[in-house]
Length: 549
Image (cartoon, rainbow, N blue to C red; front, top):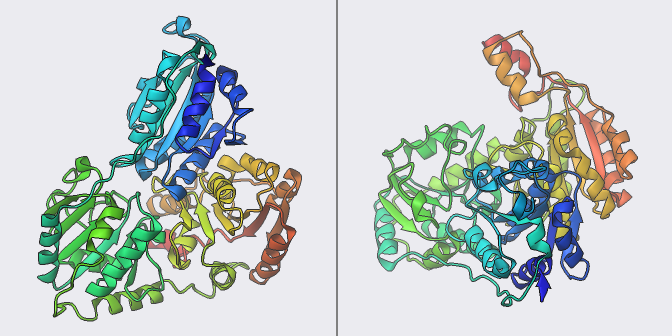
């Protein structure tokens, strides 16, 4: 006889869970009690949104479901941003929510929410476990749903009294991943389409990748002399200094790269949906009928033909597809000589940081310094905002598993993601890029980094405005500033108040020393970079945007 709480923990262990993230609540005390004797690591967070974002980052970096526990009502609704991120980012995640006792449902009991309705549009599956004997069934199914096809979030509600029931139940067994691979006929047709091309282009995106798949796709691109781009915030899928790399197909795309995608005659899209951001508002590929010959490879059949009608649809996970094409013999004659080389030259020019900028702090030299000192396996995290352009455009990702950022464009993601990444890989350098507005959406979880002695380095790029919104505001309503000015704390003092290390950079030349001291401190650190608001993008100032309008 075991309690529902014990069965939940046993099911997690059976499915290989090493760590979970939570904000504790009285609605699932029985689970917390069962965790006392378990070998599963528990990270206690300061807000449910940050907890689910940590779980999402864990899922992104491992390919296995990130696990999060929150309490009912406000706890669950506070967790919803992380669920939305996992949905749009195709990240495997399982959220467990404490629920009101079963005999109080449908009475609007204390903190009661009907989670099937609340999460209906943002989760792959939402269920409530009424019978503790069915816990092994529900939990193992949750792992299967979260990881199969297009990965995503699953939500399981746990009535408080169900968790204290003592029952006999079958022992939980781990889920088996569902592998989807391409047929020989589809690979043969792919080869025929590529051989007839004169301007082919490859875009990598989505999830369900691993190190072997990245290496296999690299060898395929080499043999076929294919230029390769990475979808928005999926840049870790191809070495940026590889001669076939063409750049990231995302926000603020290199105009030459955008033209290359539009002018491609055969476009091979592997793993991604090619949604609004990477497609530049659905302008790089016409929907529903692309001008390019589109070969779309995706693990979920429902995504194939949903937005774009492909010439060839291949229902396959990226890793299985990469394995199938790695040894595909290229044609004896390449019809597109120099395409990859030219694309890479364009990328190198585009990704070289500027040396100057408005104000006393220039981000270009700071990025150049970071490029010189960061190891290739450093993990970079960020949320959303114009500041992220400095990372996405100028940092050259070299290895798989070095990026955790929300394709959904959610603010507040970078810090929780850095905490999760450092717990997963304590030996690796973890750097969070955050704007001032972005940081303060989940800044309280810097305390979590301190509590668990996780020496992440957070770069808070502070211009005292909601920069992206101000940029749009100045373009659409020049001179009519409304609701975008911010008054911020001293972020370096805030870091020290939490028990971490703090630095302030008021001039470009101060950054190198600040970085070195932060690294040597061995503590979680915040380096506040006080950037002139005029430095709104690498290429334009706010005045430029205002005057152009």
